[in-house]
Length: 239
Image 1 (cartoon, rainbow, N blue to C red):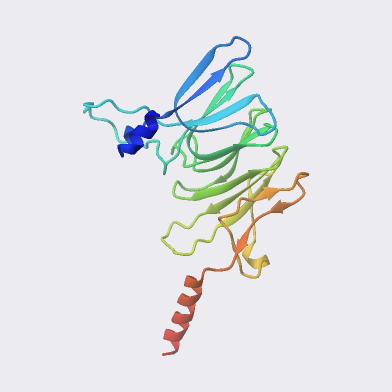
Image 2: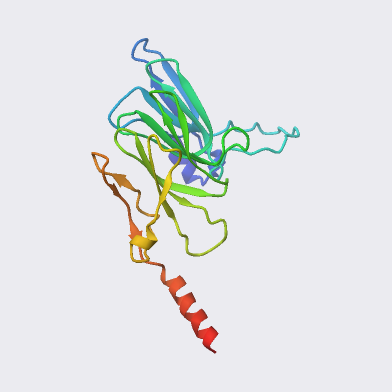
């Protein structure tokens, strides 16, 4: 009711209340609350883990103290990701995460980050929740974009889309990557050369088959704007 009333009053986003994640411990009955939660996820078919991103605490009004310029949590930069074990006091934290997911049965966590310029570089990572090992599947630049994170059911394979073009090109050539446990890094799947010149579709999240032997992904024709530009350029070259 409070949120509905604030929306009616057309309050700004920063004036709206934030979500709080409450976790009730079945062993003790205690309820632990985590404020300023942006998003949370759990394995689809298993318990044991929960992960959530948190926004930074709001600054108090009138706080005019000089602050050092540093990278801040935001929609563009990503948010701090916290990973908690519901069976123990084990917890993990990763900086500036933009997207994340668990494998179906909770063996692995996959996430993309813009990096903190010191200990964690921008890219896509796989964290094995059984061994505790974190593997960099792809490391790039903070301005590189990643989406379509996907994991096989057992967490041993990962697929994702990457846009490494930092220009303002109207047509975006998203690249499809695949990683299998034991590999040093993810490798690019050559889509355009094997799909009749069509592009990898950024609007379809890659999906692994149940047994992990197949990877389904979307393709789309080259946008007409690029075709028209090429035709126009050819015409101008002939004049």
